Length: 559
Image (tube, one colour):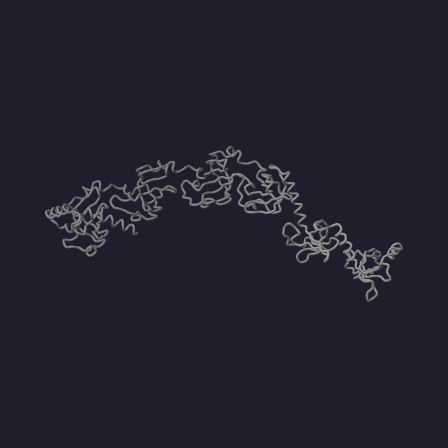
């Protein structure tokens, strides 16, 4: 019930729709309360219009707005919510023009933003909630914040707020203050805001700084996530401040001493060191000697003898290895390491193990156009040049006499320790038959051999002592021979007479038709051969040999 003083004041008021009056709660019902405003009848206010319905009790004073003095039931229609709205709206218009600040409590989430109670309901667009896009708006419900009034529509009685503009303004003020007082060398607390491939952005309480990946650690880092994570707090060193562009460069490794400052003392050249393989690349392996210090073992420094195509053939990540320091470049922060230097170089003693003239055995490892490589021991190869395969045969490719995997005996011809080369020879296992050819064959001798090869100009006959003789087409028969394959076959055994020996060119000319000649006939034939000139019907043996060489070369190209 109203007091006497309140009743006297109220009686002086004009009861009319739209007026705000004071009342007293005289009854609390399940969904409404009965309010006495000193009028001839009580009024009803919905319980839902109170912010805390459970706290409403009989005897409480309350401001209400008269909506109707009398409804069909003869009751006054009142609204507590509209009374509060009208009072607060007038207050807001008085104290807070557009651009002013006001404190409010987030009431609920609606489409496009939030509803905020600032005395009246106001709208906060989702884009104005924070400086970063927020997907979960529900987290703000029930919290109170300060807002900036960005728009007031008196006709519609609505207000648009922004929290983002206040945050940005505060950050700008903080940024300006930080930039003004921040100096290179300062140590600042920050929070990891974002990670990229090239570094991390650190929030310095209102100012973002860049911590580049190269300034995170003295050691190797492939990605900032190996050291940092978003939200992590840390102390960083200010390296540079650009006030005009508002950019700050930060460092983490600078909080610790540079391990490369006394590197020559810790890892002198020639010292044996231990470390862990941290990275394998096509040209070598990086080994961590201590945090921030890595050395490179080049692929050529892995083994004296093994042919290492790639470092992974010998090493694997995280493997503990021992190595020897080969060189240090402190300015470029590079250390060269070697693993093969842990053992003696077998090439240092190769001249003692394989002196020139020594007979050695080995397996054919590889064939090339110019020779064959023979493995004498693991990592030690010698090469037989194609010219050192035979004294007598003209060999165009080593595959004519050798194949991979063959076990061969050779003679050491030369040792070049500096260039790690050993020259071997097969023909040197025996004497050169051409050194005493006159004792083996004389003009007029009858010889027997098998046809080894046919050509358009003649046939080659294999003789003793691994020597080939050539029977020109003109020396096969007294009768004209158009095609050699019509009269001779490979593998056929023939008897022929030696009619020409060219020691300088290492060639023997044979004649099958002269095999049955008498001495007189042989002399006549020799005179005829000696008198031949190029261009005549009967080609001289010299030209036949030349033709044979050209034919062999052509066949070699085709193969």
